[in-house]
Image (cartoon, rainbow, N blue to C red):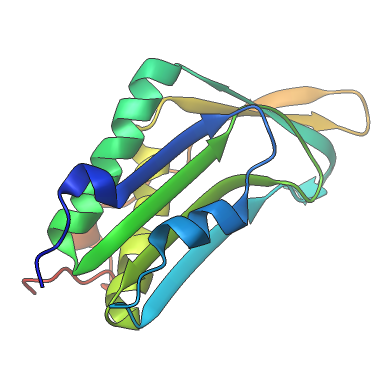
Length: 164
């Protein structure tokens, strides 16, 4: 069976509105796939010993949109992935709400899991979206992205690509 063109296999959203997990799952759903992996990143009430009230995300949206699409293409190029949906929230994100949703469908679970994990690390690495935490004590602070160690340098080489 011929796969649809790449663009019809990718769904990218940057929104100030609440993210819709079901929209991502519906987009990637396909009868030819036996696996759907989904990651939901949400605002927690603490970080580094501080009590968090809410998060706020800012983005350079034209570039962020291009970079999220680039990541989706990388996922399709490196794993046996059918469809990818990436949604990222901007603006104020209350406790318990999602700031990132990634859904991936594939014939087999390993490709879906590996591609999903890859996307989260890659988003932190190249997408111009910045996170600011607001704390219960009235302070706030911008968080620097976590440095992502290149896969070749990691001891845990769980993110395997289709040609490995």
